[in-house]
Image (cartoon, rainbow, N blue to C red; front, side, top):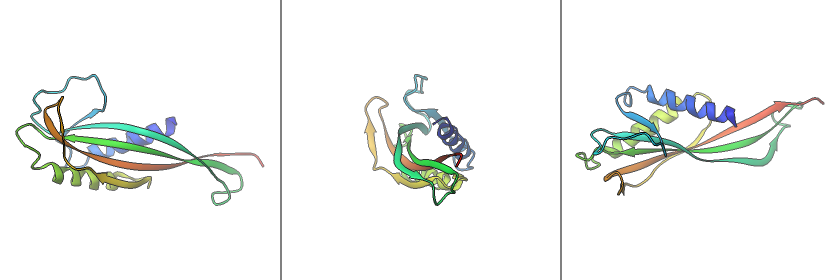
Length: 145
């Protein structure tokens, strides 16, 4: 599982380097870090929602001396709009983020990216959209025959 965590962190680092997203603030989701209130710029909270381990084993198609399984992670990028924006640029930014996810996926693990409808966060007193990426990893090890 540590390998998957490192892969997700690497993906997020590459996404943050995209020219269209460099000026944005990324934070860990569910973090105790103080956030500006009211928001003056876009804020993207990144969190891994879940991790599931498949029960199907990969073997014959990979190699005779390998065994492994498919593990799937769901990563959420919650994009908060600044209070004075009202969400006008939110869809465009989420589309840029979606493109950056696909472009930054150098390992080919991203299966799906979805953008949610706009919603209101009472605590942050602002609107947001979620960009959710489903990532699948084949974790395997070499075994003696």
